[in-house]
Image (cartoon, rainbow over all chains, first blue to last red):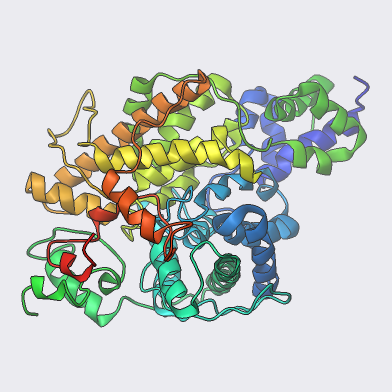
Length: 270
Length: 270
C-alpha cells in the first residue's frame, strides 16, 4: 500500500491525540494490538476544556440552527469551537446526532432543544460516570434551565438577523410552552418564519450563556445565579424529596404549568 | 518507541475499521496526513445497524440503569449490543455522555430519560443532517413516545428483579408526570427504592420496544402502531400547523396535562 514508516507513525498519532496521552496510545499499539487501542481511542468524560469566546459561540450557534436546528445549534456552537481549539477527541464526535433534539426532540415539542443541547455540551466537558461527579455538572445544567425559565429571551441579537425579535418569558423548559408564550407576545404563528428566527436567536442566547458558565467553571468561579423560585420551593416542601407526600420529583418552575387561574381552586389553601 | 512496521500498520488499522472503508483510511493516511484522516475517522450518520435481540437489550438496559441511570441504560442497552456486533464506529462513541439524561435531564424531571436515550439511539442508526432524511427517524421516535404515553408500563420484567412492580399509564413524556402517576398507583414515594426499580424496569421496557422497532425498520417493515389519540387530533385542528390559531406545536397527548377537571371549564365548548 506504499505507506512509509513515517506516514504510519502519523496515522497512529491520531489515536495518540485522541487519548490525550500519546505515549499510552502508542504503547497500547505496541503491546495489546488494535482492539485495545480502539477501546482507548476516545477518552471517557470529562473531555478537556479551553475557554471560548461566548460571542463567537453565539454566532456559530445561530448559523448552526439553520443547519441542524436548535439542539445541534447550541451543542455545535460550543463543541465546534472546542474542535478548532483542541482538536481530538472533539473531532471524533458525530455532532449530527444532536440534530435529534430538534423542536423538543424529533419535533414532539417536549424539552426545548436548546436546553437538551446545552445539557449535553456541559456534561461532555464536566461530567463523569461516578454519581458524586455528576452533581456539579447537574447544578450547572440546572442553572441554565432556571435562567431559561426566568429570563426575558432571546437576549442575544445576531449580527445579521433575518427579522427583529421580541422577548418573552417561558416559565417552562418545554418547547411547546416556550413557543406558545412567545407567539402570544409577538403575534406570530407557531410555524411562521418569524418564530423560526426567534428560535435561532434563542439558540444563540442559550449557547452564549452556556459558554459563559463553562468559562466561569474553568476559572473555578461558577455559582448558581438562578435558584428555584420561592413559590416553587413552597411546592417542594410538600411534594419533593423528604416531604410528607413525596409524590413527585422536579427542579422546575411548578407555577409555569400548574395553578392556572381556573385550576387554582383545586389545591388546598397554602 | 520500538514500534515495528507491523505494529504501526495495526494501529492505523483502527482508523480503517472506524471509517468502515479500510482502503480509504489507509490511502488518506498516505496522501493527506493525519489531520484529514482524523476528520474521516468517525463516519457521519446513519451508523450501520445489525438486528439485535430485544431480550438481551432489555437485560443490558436494566443493568445499565443501575450503572448510569435511565437515559444511559436505554442508549447503552442498544448501542452496547451494536458495539459487540459491529465494533467501530460504536467503540469510538463516549456513551457516558448519555448519563446526562438522568431523571428527565440532570435530575430536572423534564423529558423522561428513557425516551431521550431511545431518541438518540434511533437517530444514531437511522438519522442524517438533511431535513428530508430526518422524517423517518422522527416518525420512529414519535412511535416510541406515543407508545410510552398510551401503554401500561413497565411491560418487561427483568430476570432477577429487586421487587415486583405494578404498571401505570403516564399520558405524558415527562419524567415527573410519569413518576407521579406511578406513585399514585403503586403507593410508593417518588424517591423510594421501589420507584427506582420501577424506572429500571421502564428502562428495560423502552429499550426492548426501541430495539423491536429498529429491527422492524431494518426489515423494511416499520409502521407507526400508536398514532396520536383522536382527542389530541381534535386539539390540533385549532392549535397546530395550518390551523386558524396555530399557536403551539406538539406531537403529544394534550389531555395528559391540559384539561384537568377543574380547568376544563376555561376552554370553549368543543
